[in-house]
Image (cartoon, rainbow, N blue to C red; front, side, top):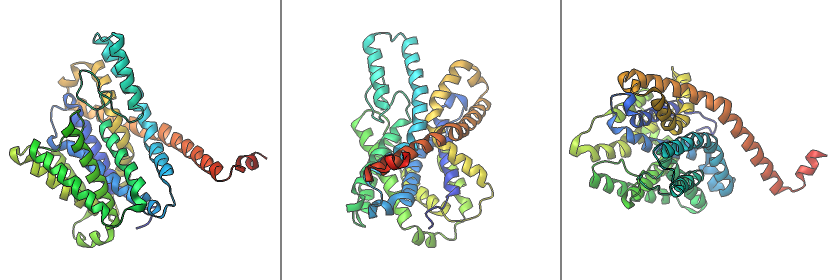
Length: 365
C-alpha cells in the first residue's frame, strides 16, 4: 500500500457517519430518527485507527517520528476547527446560562471553568448536566480518541505483534459486556463510571482494531475480494438507519461494530475507480467540521427560526445539512487548511532549531 494513497470511499463513509450523528443531535429538524446513528462514533474510531496506521504506524515503530512530534501533528490536525467550534459553543452556553437566569457568580465561574478545560480537551462536571462536555456534547469522542492516540504513540516502539490484539480483545469484551447489560452501545458521553469505562473501551477497540486492519490489509483484501467496494456505503447507511430490534439491540450493535464495520473498512479501502470521487472527497473533508459544528450552529439557527424548524421538517433538516456542508467546506478551505499549514511550518522550524540551534542565524544571514 502506498504511503500517499487516498482512500476515497473511506472519506465518503466518514462523511455519512458525520451526517448520521448530525441527524441524531438535531431531531426537531428531521421529524425522524436514525436509531443506530450513535454507532457513527464507533465507525469514526475505526477509520481513525486505520488512517493513523497508514500514516504513522511504521514511523512510530522505527522512531522516525517521536511521541512529542506525533502529539503535535494530531493537535495541529484537530485544533483549528475545534477552536472555532468551541468559540461558537462557548458563546451559546454562556448565553443560555445567562438567559436562563444563571447570573450567580458561582454558576458563571463553573461555566467558565468548563469551557476553559474543554479547550484542553478535558471534561469537567457542570452542575445540572450529565454530559462530559455540556458545551458541545460530541467532544466526548475527541477526548477518548486523543487519549488512545497518545497512549498508542507512547507504547508503539515497545509493543510486540500480539500486544494490539490483546488490547482489542480486552476492550471488545468490556464494550460487549456493557452493551449486553444496558441494551445498547450508546455509552461514553455521560458522567458515570460505567459510561466512562465503556467510552474508553469503544475508543480502544475501534482505534486499535483499525490499526490491525491496516497492518493486515493485504491479507484481508484477499479474503473479501469478491465483495465490491460499491457495497460499502449502502451497508453503512443500512446499519446506521436500522430500527430498534428490542432485546436484540445489543447483539445488533456488537455485530455492526465487531464485524460489519471492519468488513466495510477493508472493502472500501481497496484501490478502485470511484465514479462519485469528488462527492466522496467533499464529504470526507466536511466530516470533521460537521461533527464539531452541528450542535452550536443547529441550536443557534433553531433559536432564530423558532417553530418553523418543526413545521417544515424534514425540509428544514435538509436546509440545515446544506448550510453545514457549505460552511464546512468553506471553513476547511479558508480557515482550517491555511492555519494548519502555518502551524506545521512553525512546528518544523522549532524542530530544526532543536536539532541545530544555529539554523535561524544562518537563515537570517
